[in-house]
Image (cartoon, rainbow, N blue to C red; front, side, top):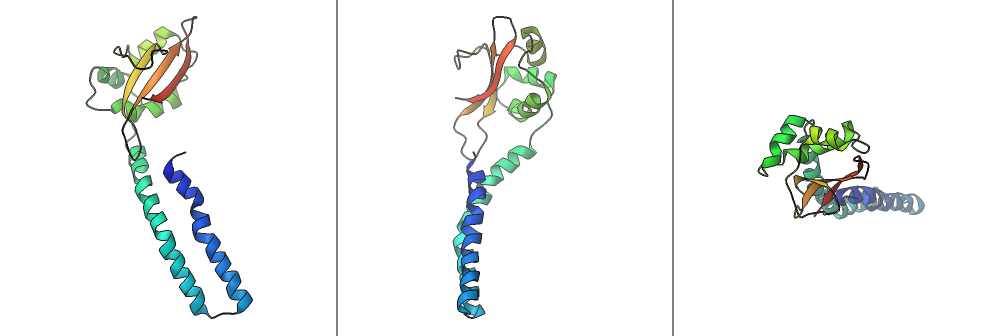
Length: 163
């Protein structure tokens, strides 16, 4: 679960629950509307840091989502020789959505994605494609598409992994 999704999940409890208690208190004690307005203003001050933090954390995910592109096999293969532009990172979600890699024959996989350069990462996978820097607020790792081939020369596992 991403941090902003967690904050979104707790946001109602941080903002609405105290307001409900304030309204119940108002009805029970018949205090003035001024008290209710003070409580609402206090609630706004308390909730503001959460809303700002949520906005900052969600901005990166929204930007990443807007930069996604449709999968193009020729562009994917052409980008295998360079790590300057992480175009594969913007394509991988569409690739996994449109193609069922699991069960695909090894030749079909190579025709679709090309043969990746050799890497020492993830030695238990036969094909490892570098996608780009990790998506998210703090990007310190890389994301990879790791594909495992079974004894029958078919894909048994394909997943996005981080180093």
